[in-house]
Length: 195
Image (cartoon, rainbow, N blue to C red; front, side):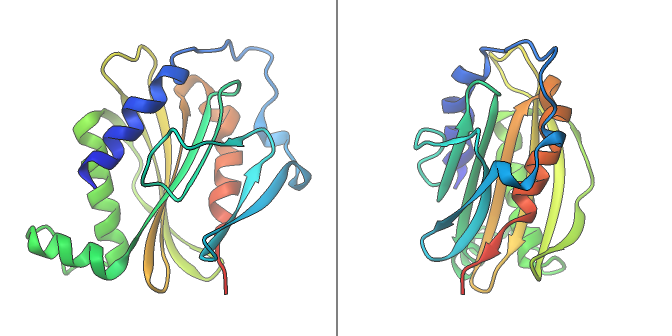
C-alpha cells in the first residue's frame, strides 16, 4: 500500500507537467449527462466516466479503474481493498483507531501515504455524504510534488461498501481545478455497487 501512491505520483506527472494554457477553455460545469458513460468494474461497482477520458493502465498498477485525459490534464483512479484485510494490517501496525469507522481509518491511511510523497499545502475537512445509500466522505487537497513546477489539486472520495473500502482519486493542475471540479464530483457521486 505504501508504494501504491508513490507509483501514482511518479508515473502520472510526466503528462501533467505539459501544462496547457487554460484560457478560453470550456468549463466542465457545462457538461450534461450525455457527456458521460457508465463502466462496470469486476462485477463489483460501476461509475460514470466523462467521454473525454480514456482508459489507461499506467497510473497505478493496484488501481481497479484508471482513466485520463492528457489534453485536459484530468486523471482518475479507484483503489479498493477488502475491509477485513485493511483492518488486519493496520491493527498489526498499531495504526488502527477504534474511535473511527473503517472508512475513516482508510481515509487517514491514504492521506498519510500521500503526504509522504507530496507537500500538502491545503486540505479541506472531510465532508460526510451518502452516495447511492453508502457512507462516504469527500475532501480536496492542494499539494506540491518535488520536480513538478505546478501545484496539483486532488479530489478524494472514500466509500464504505459491504465488504470493501474504496478511494476515488481525481486530480488535475491547480489552475484547472475549477474547470474540472463539477465533473470530478459527478464521477464520485455516480459510484454504485453492482448487485
